[in-house]
Image (cartoon, rainbow, N blue to C red):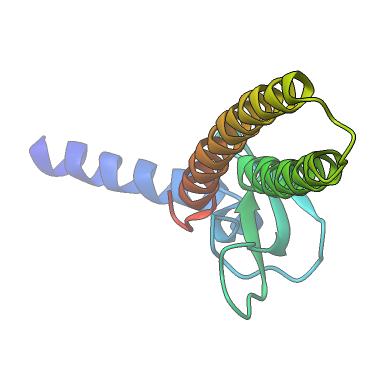
Length: 149
């Protein structure tokens, strides 16, 4: 009786293994693929055949879709950080040009100095926030793009 049950279980496992399509078995995160931008759903997760953005000299592999989404967010965040740094530089240039005006009264110079101080404080806060967000986006991207997770 035990031998019969063992044989039945072994046959069931073999039959179930034969039913799984081989294409899906090969499609896992980090596995090689040929057709760029091909899509597959495995275990409820969406995968795309593309180059992994965190792998140097990457070839087309199955990458989880969240990897690409988080990579886009990371790139957007770094662009915003760069733009804010440029805006800060423009603000400093404009302030310097105004400070060079010899016709400013002492009261105007005092107001300009306070406006410069407040403006720089604001830009520094914004830049620090974007810098923190950029680091967080990079960590999320690196986790989402790690093959096998």
